[in-house]
Image (cartoon, rainbow, N blue to C red; front, side, top):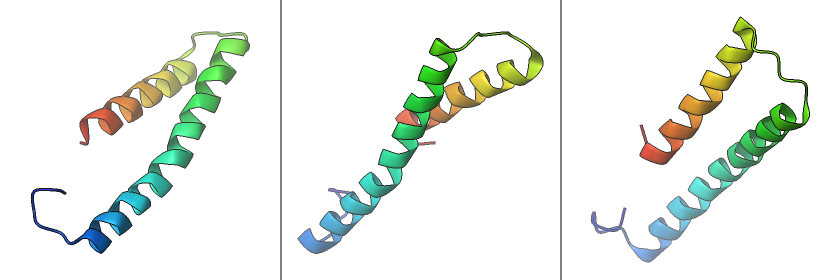
Length: 65
């Protein structure tokens, strides 16, 4: 974003929109994780799918894939 020569207004809008998208996703992931920690964890196939979804969602968010 900083290397392509965007003006200050475009960079500000892009950063604001990025934060507006990432903040609810972060809150959702924290809520799901705390629900798993505080609940009775039973590792059935649907729960393993949910845990793997959370893992891949987080990894994709960190790497930008």
